[in-house]
Length: 194
Image (tube, rainbow, N blue to C red; front, side, top):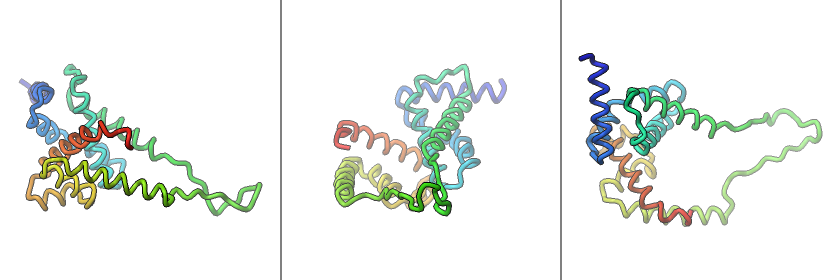
């Protein structure tokens, strides 16, 4: 049996287990394909945080759509296609038109510059939302809560979290993925408030 065929059979078995809710299967798929997905992003992006966030987003999308995986294709091809589409979406979202402030407009010598900062009212509303979200985060089990706080409030990298918790990097990524998924489940009934 060739290595490629055995990898494909292994991946198909892992996907089936993951669909049934086996968390170890999810973790193993992430461990097997994390480097490949991360490479897709690191070739095009300079920000390590963007690379990590888009890698997590890719696995999140893949795991949400795992039932649609067609096992006639290699899992690596499928996950890398999702990564490529995630990257395209990222670039589209961040593609903003720019103008030079050094060039003068023919019609007038003044330029309107919009301040996108929060006004006092929106600032207060944002603070209230943050307090509300914080209370929702505290509904998570302590080990998930700690991961969310370290990643999104303390803004630690995955490697820093792994070092701080004395935990393998793959485990941090898998648990953070699960914590985000649980937080989304808590937030869904609250959607109207945001």
